[in-house]
Length: 363
Image 1 (cartoon, rainbow, N blue to C red):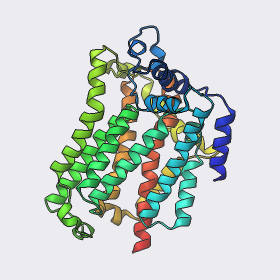
Image 2: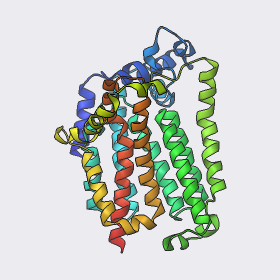
Image 3: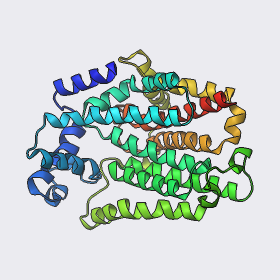
Image 4: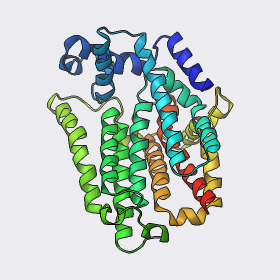
């Protein structure tokens, strides 16, 4: 509570000085508020490439809606949104682990470990969209986790798909989570259908057995929200001839001989440089994770729900690092973005740790 109070105080006392908050999300929100419509003239303007026209409009639309509610583009009150999203993330993290049977005091400690990180702090005092993406992905993956664990039926799978697809509407990275989570879910449910199920998956509670999600249902539950949220935006970008942002991949990037050498530096910057930073770090979560997995390896081997959470987190991290080799952007750009892009995978890893600990307590 004290930490969140500090975040609120700092957020309200400092100006919005991050580039996404000013030039991307904030600019689009004000343009929507002024025009009372999507500002297509801004998105297609060649003189304003800094607004990143290919970025989704979920966050700007939300900010613009708040402007309409206030009756003016009040930049001071709008600074309440990042810390409020931070509070929602902490409450969600605590409640999800509590629902899995983790002791309240341990839920509080693990939530504090996540919230004390420098990455989370930076995204909670500026108009970054990471916390919004985090809420979509965390809840979406948790509902799919419930489906895999047979704690919920097809409705949870469809709700998870809806949240993940809306995450792709919040940030372009959300599409990566949707694809990876979808592939893993279909594979794990297919394994269960073919008889490779553990003993805990054979017990259904409250009639869930008759409401189990099948791979076909999950495909439908993931595909329909994706068509609803992602496809129209991609079609619009294509019709307006808008290029996909300033991040591009190319085979020619592999010719740079220094990329293999700087990978270690990227990993160090991403995970361990924050160990000496203030007000904390999430790097400890990635240090604790292998130890917990080793101690609980039998349960992890048989528990497909936790496998799903870990594979989504690690799969996204691997995609980030592999894409670095094919990226045409300079190293400095990747280092600046590294502390933010690991925020969501870190939250998923922490939730997996909580589920493993809860399994240990219940045995």
